[in-house]
Length: 67
Image: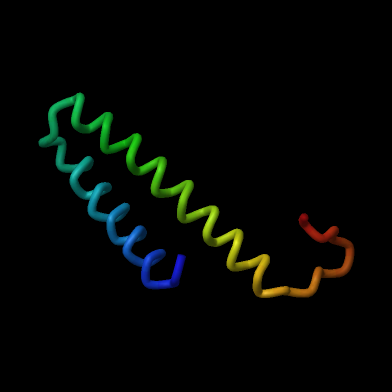
C-alpha cells in the first residue's frame, strides 16, 4: 500500500469519526461504520508494520529484532 493509500485511509477514518460524533446516524448504521473503522485501522496498522520492517531499521541496543 503506497503512502497515498495510507493517507486516504486516515482521511476516511477521520471522516467516520466526525460522522459518528454527530450522533445523526441510526444505531445500525453507526455500528456498521464502527466495524468498518476497525477494519480500516487494522489495514493501516498492518501497512505501517510492513513499512517499518521494509525500512530495515537497526535494532536498538537491548531490543530483539522482530520476525
